[in-house]
Picture 1 (cartoon, rainbow, N blue to C red):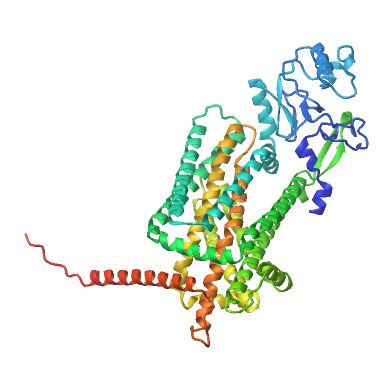
Picture 2: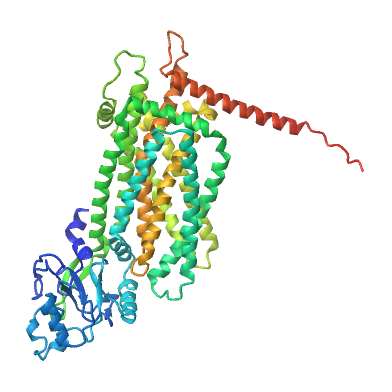
Length: 605
């Protein structure tokens, strides 16, 4: 990170730069051997290409002269007199810096130092603040050179930067939806749960339908000429297929679990009672969110520096070119590992803090003086004794997600090839296996953190103990956990789908000049992490309560000598859920017995 920040220049990517080493909109330092470098461009914030209708390229780089100007010409300029008048009226100089504006029509070198005439009308587009020509023929040529000749990393970064305002707005929308879901689960009732499930079903169908409609619109658009549009079309097809599969699976699960709605409401009311006893639990996602935002901003800043890590070289005519440092630029894979591991570490710290507070409150109910600050006590315990447990748990998740990401990327790469059907199938199988392992490890980590806080043992010992305890009564606990976790997962899906729907509507207006599939994926990733961050309070409280309940029933029998730590409401809920599950098991066994005892009668004609 340190080297990329020193060697990189994110300002060049964000603000744009001219052909002489000056970053537009900033005061620059001179480059040795480049007389036109080191100028104060504070008032000149836009990049203007002198030959925007016929850009020259060399080694996949734009070779035409670029200048920093204070405003783009919004009307066509046909003569040098028009260029001079535009400079006089707007203070925007469209010729090379060493030619004074009063000499635009007098200098014999004006033809080589000024733009090729006529200059088409242009408008500043937030893609590195470039002046984009507005005439159809110039626009098509300009966009094809500007976008198609970029490498993959720069296309990703250009998509992020050109849609930065939209991405920020969608992130705010994800936060608002997550807060709404958190308060919905906090004050949940049967009516609210029915409304929530209806909205989830509506969102699933709406997003899937819009994705297929946009894909149909793309394939029937005969004007698609740019690689960005073709890439967006391919990504739309992938999004539509994945969204449709998820929609079908979730609709089937909702239909199967529809009879357990009242039990789910009771479960969340028990969870809410625990949260009421320690209201500061609801504040934990806020500070976790602040830390995650700070880390993600730092991560993006380093990513921008990785994309611009280069050294300045002076070429003919005093022009400056930046030679990319290939080695450091390919470290973005390593940078991606840092994103996953650190994000998981921060989220794991929140899980440990919440679980520690619930454990402290649960096992101190029978004492006359319960802890006054369980969150603070849990934080002190975490940072003093359990940092290694959190690091190990988050590292295991990272080690699973890295190969899963690689296999998914390779599988998507092979989609364009007609051969290697066996290889594509094997990669999909590997990606699915790692996805399943990821989910299993996440659940194992959560239980290991809780057991660590109860017994004070290390990560591996805690994981083994929690597995042994839960395996003694797997059916009932797994069923109760399944109901709650499924509703919480639907809440995360609700946030992600409606955020992605807003992104689809916003990004579709600028489909030409950005590969918006990457920003949309980042927004979906951000929305899921934010939703997971806020709703994991209920998930952590629920898992902690159930594991504490199992340990409580294992070590105590309810007698005066060994009283239970659980309250009456939790005991009543667990008894009701056990009766419901047992009755269903008996009905299933009875139906199977009846089927086995049925005699086949001969057909009477």
